[in-house]
Amino acid sequence: MKAILLFALVLCVASAYVARVADDVNDKSPFCEVCLDLVKEMKDALKQGKQLKEIAHKFCSEKMPDHLKAVCHIEVDIYWKKIMEMIEKNVDAEKICQTFHLC
Image (tube, rainbow, N blue to C red; front, side, top):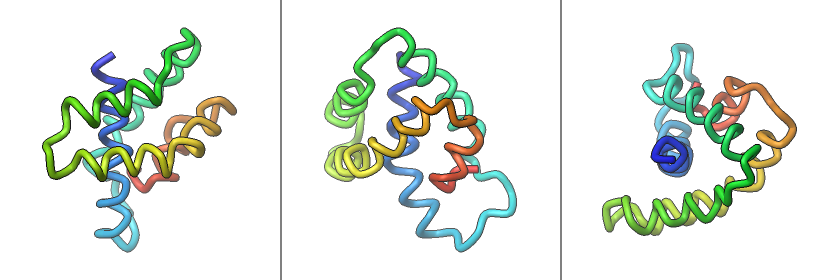
């Protein structure tokens, strides 16, 4: 469960940061392996019918530093539909992470 929450954090905060800082990513970013593992866990959690968006927002509220809470919530809301579409279509974990500039 903690890994799912970490996935939300990585996608919410890191994707925006990495996309803005790097013009192109030739090597895997430091977030790539974490992202790959966590996408796989998200797929498993989805199969179990867990409410992933609620978990992500709870993580933003409870675990993020105060100065990142609002950004985390916004990023979850902005990218959530795309994340879930890709997971539901069983898109490969690496492709999902590449979409968000994490791999």
